[in-house]
Image (cartoon, rainbow, N blue to C red; front, side, top):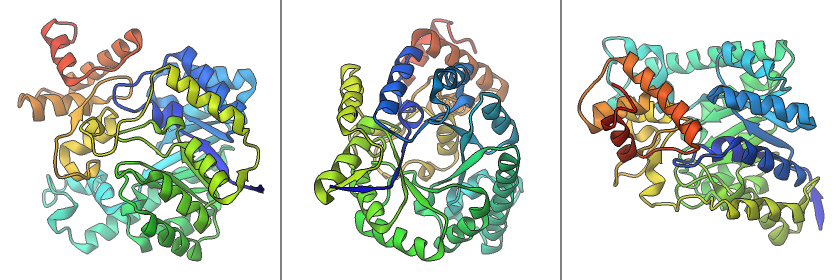
Length: 390
């Protein structure tokens, strides 16, 4: 066997728990974290901004001696960077979209009368897209500088990188390089294929001296082979979840990546305890936790607030299949957009925005109290019963 250096970054407790309908109790999260750390995994991500309970979890884990393993997934805002720092973390993953579709969808320029209600497919002028791209670079750089100035190690996650313009992606890598440890390329909606992946990573490395990392989703059932090809092409870090759990059809399964590299190429990742890997997956199996199958209707379930908000305005933002219909769930990871989608798309009964916010707050509390998430049908029943007041 040959030992290779490859950073393994775990997202089981963050992206994994964002699987629609999945909820981990705090005690379960602590047990899972301990088991994943015992397997030698180098980074374990948690998102403090989701709820105060996540902040408490991060603080507890750091006090338990896991400060070198905890990394805080952090939205691109000084407020959230400060919250992560206040938890005691030393490392954060800052994320921001890099595809033209998501950048245009979220840029302030859409408030202009010429672009209201338009999406990227509506023939947006090149000059506008160029301006949106420049706005994104400036915004990210401002927050990267701030995070490093206050002493944090920063990993940048390029959301929807697999659908980004190649030249713009290279521009981002070069601009962000002085401030980051890794540039994390996300196949956010799982559109890559193995053939494309190897060439894409190989070509990006021609222009980049910053270590590249990958975070691949499994919508087409190809996340494992895509990740293997990325390693063969030269990435230095792999991000995924144990069991392959996560949004829609899940993430790449870390145990499959690690064992695949070992059995196919005779490569063992430095620091990984391969016997302990099985204990993590066995624990998840005892919990009855597993991902939804690619192409299934269950894999079109969405619970994360920012994703549902985007789906409201552009179906292709987080849904690559022309058939089926997105199914909205509600829980700890939900936002006001989940209720906006419910009332405006499902019920055709718009409410004032402040009511969506109030409903979001209530469902988060209820989800934590009952240790679960809720389907659309269950939420409608809660409204009928008066538990969710509108």
